[in-house]
Image (cartoon, rainbow, N blue to C red; front, side):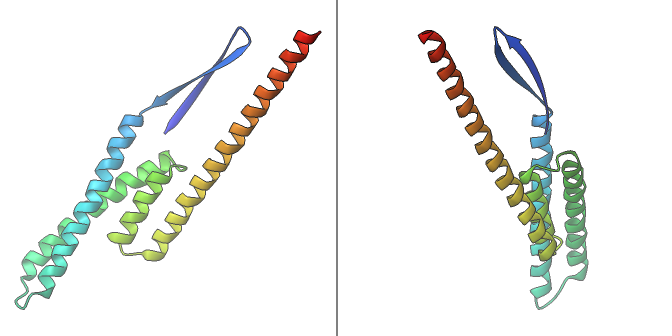
Length: 152
């Protein structure tokens, strides 16, 4: 998600407007990737079911496996693009981790992605808390300054 901030000064107050570009498009792309991941998982389950039957239909199993790969590749392509565009978005990183764990079956790589997403969220919440504390201190200082000014 890309954000542009426009700062303007109106009678001593700073007004910040955020223009969010393509947030709706980002959500749609993420949803498509998540749906492709779920489809790949479903097709893979069907492959496993085919392989557990007494009479294995290899042709059917191979077709299901091809579908698994197609949907997994689609999800990977979308998620790779989204991560490149939004490297600090924990939701996208988690979706990528889910694909890696559930479709590509690479638990170690997926775990690293989940840890990265958690670290970003922790950092964001710490930054937000620090920002709020700074704003509170600024308001307290402004209030103190106004009260001092009124007394004089």
